[in-house]
Image (cartoon, rainbow, N blue to C red; front, side, top):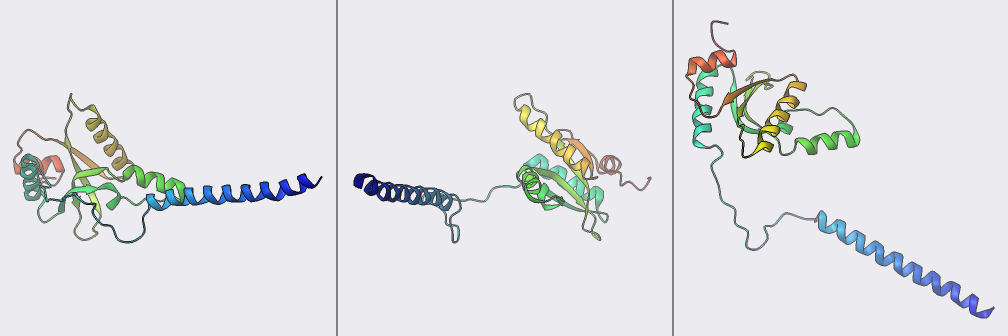
Length: 175
């Protein structure tokens, strides 16, 4: 009888120590996932500036700017979360924002007065070597259409004239 009375507190102590150790291990994992304090680059990591646009994209950007001058501001490589407002609560909002996090619009036409994106120009980059890239482009188009934003797709390779772009983008004076 005396042995059973000693075993109960001993097992309770062992259980408490195991719970404490488990808690320390789990809390250590979450601390490593979200470190506190300012971000510092790890040793050996080097950051360098790189061009935002490729040569063909830059030429197209300049042509779009000429075609829409005085009507829109033109921005390149804009993340979708910067101009799409997600109206949802809790986990649904977080899920959508995570999905949008790495998606971007190639060129964004912003009304200078309202500062609202009125049109997005996406480059048609269908590539037989990278089907994921074209699927991503179609998904971006669906997202933008659901937000009521007009999407225009241009071929990345062919050259356009300013007048052709004005007509394609719907900003020519004839309309």
